[in-house]
Image (cartoon, rainbow, N blue to C red):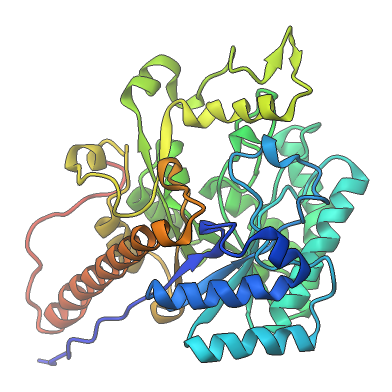
Amino acid sequence: MRIQPFVPKFMKIGILTAAIQELTPREVRDADPDRAIEEWIAYARELDADHIQLSAALHPTETDVPPEAMLDPVANTLDLRKPFDRERARRVQAALTTHRIGITEVGYFDNLLHHETAVRQKKHDFMRRVFDAAVLLGVNAVCGFVGRNQQHSMDQNLLDFEQWFVPLLEDAKSRGLTYRVEQCPMPGWTTGDNFHNNIAYTPGAWIALHKICEKHGVGDQFRIHYDPSHAILMGQDTRSLFQFLKDAGYNFLIGGFHVKGQVIDARGVSGWGYGGQTLQRGDWIDGRPSPNPADQVNAWKKQTVLAEHELPGTARHDPLAYLQNRTVDWLDHQLAARELLALDVANTPLIVEHEYPPARIQDKARLHPILAGSLAFVRHIDEAAAAMYALQHEVLAAQNIPVQGKGREAYRS
C-alpha cells in the first residue's frame, strides 16, 4: 500500500484590470500611458492579488463602437496608441518586481471577424500590437474573442474564421503565444436579432474551430479562457460542459478561467426565455436601429433582462439555484475543473472579472474592500477545492479508501 502525501495544488489568483477603468484618471494616463499599468499593479498588491490580466483596448477616440453604446466602458489599461517598446516594458517590469505581481495574459476583447474590411484590419493590427507587447512583457498568452461576421451565417463564419482568424493564430505561433478565447456570446453587440455574436461560444463550436486550426498547424495556439457566467446564460452547467469536453477528447482546450458568475432572474426567464428580450427594447426607433449610441446599449436586454453578472462572493449561497443552473456553484466549478480537465493546475490562471452592475464603482477607495473580499472568496474556494481533490483523488485513492457519497453528476442537473 502506498501512502500519498497531502499536497494540494492551487491556481494563479488574479484580477482583470477592467475591474476599474478610471483607477488612473484619463487626463493623467492619456499623457503618461504606463502610469495606468503601474498604478493598477500597486492596487492589485493592495487587494492581495498575485497576478493581473492586463486589459488592452482601442482608445475611445479610435474605436468603431461609441463608448455610450457599450455595456462596459473601455478599459485600455495597456494603451497602444504608441508602440510598446523595450523601454516601456522595462518600466512595467520594474513595477511588477517591486509589488511582486505577475501578468497571466494580456486581454483584448473585440470582434475580430467584423464584416467591414477596414474595421477588421484595424482590430487585427491592434491585436498584433497586443501580441508584441505580451512578448516584451514575458507573457505567453493573450485572451480575447473571435467575433462574428454579421453578414454571414454561422457556417459561413467557419470559412471566415479560416480565412481571417487563422493568420492571427499563425502570428501568435511565430511569437510563441497561445490565444485563449473567452466564450461570451456577446448578444448585445448588435441591434439585430443575433444572440451568438462570438462564434466561439460553446464546446461544440470550440471543437469545430480547433479542427480548422489543426488543419493549418495552429491547434496548439487555440485555447479557451472559460467563463462560467456565459454557460449559465445559455442554460449550461460547468460540470456537464467539462464532461462533454472530456467525452469528446477535447478536455485539453481550457487553459484559463475568468471567475465571474451570472444570477438568472426567474421572472425574466418567465417573460422572455433564455433568448432575452427580442422586441421593444429601445434600441430600435420607428422600425429602424436608433442612430443614437445611448439607445443602442439597450440591445443588451437580450441578456440583462434575464440575468445579472455576479462578482464572486456577492451573491447569496443558493443550493437550489446551483441545481437549476441559475447561478454558479463555485466549489463544484473548481472541483470539476480538476476532475475533468487536462490542466496544469499550478500554472492555470483564475482571474476575477468584475461586471456586477451595482458595484461598478469608479472610486478605488470604495471599490477596494469589495474587490479584496471577492478575491479572498475566490482564493479560499480554490483552496477548498484543491484540498478536497487532493484528499479524495490522491490521498484516499492511494490507500484504496472509497470516497463517500455521489456528488453532483454531469448531464443530470
